[in-house]
Length: 391
View: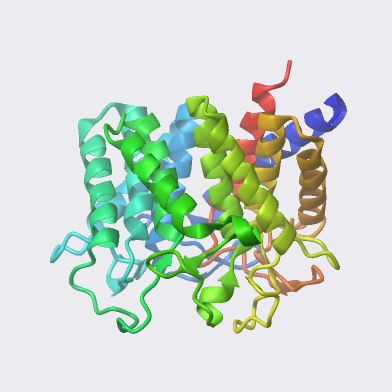
């Protein structure tokens, strides 16, 4: 990757974040009347559903705090982060058990709670950034409490009916992955004392149960002992998810000076790039079968925005940490394909859902699942990676 390309990429990520992505969301999603953020936006940013996903409240609050702490202390960003935290505090926790809702009305009335506790992980990192920004100890305490709820509920769910019977038990990669990323954030923002322990435990789980050297694959779901489950759900791979986990582990290796962790992350990227990259049309496929058989979910071959975001980060990070030109080539492939299909030149930001060949499937800019998280995190992370190695 030559100096000109690096300079162009750095400007693309930095300027895209500061001049396109962030202004789009600040202009259109902030609810000045009821608090929090309305993320269900049409192509032009108009609100098409006023309900609020709790994931997105925590994620945008985190992003605003992260930018305030690590890019520039803009008062607007801090005030909007506090605005998000106030809505989380007032409306997003169930007082009966302390767990968080998944989906609430515009006013904050509860609609749905999920069996898993990922709302808590995103709220934890949001509170962590606010502690770092303000020094207010209440935010540090809330960060620790919500992280502990996330851990406790995932390890020992209480008060929820299982989605499946005990006939075919399984374990997924999502919990250890998100634990790594959450603990990394809280280690930086509040100095979480047991962050390293949770990261070690989670990486060990991924290595022991989900990495399959014999078939060069990262399994999304396995049996409790790590065996492949020969059914639709067990054979189904999510390449973008595994690639996201790959860069979490690479980053931990860099922070610790541990080459073995960087190697593990690169191996995960290598395996899942080979399985996820669409050789015919380009881009990362959503689902594939471990044996190459048909996948049950009908959206399996669509191109969602976030797997592309994660692959852009992982390929650039692998190149920056190893110097291997293969990763520069992969990064160019995924960056160029993504940036030629997802951005909206008329109204800004990105479309979220494309058909396999890159045609737009939906003009939605946001909803319960898409909001200002994966893409701005990609833009910020890649900007930082390139800036760290620029003269």
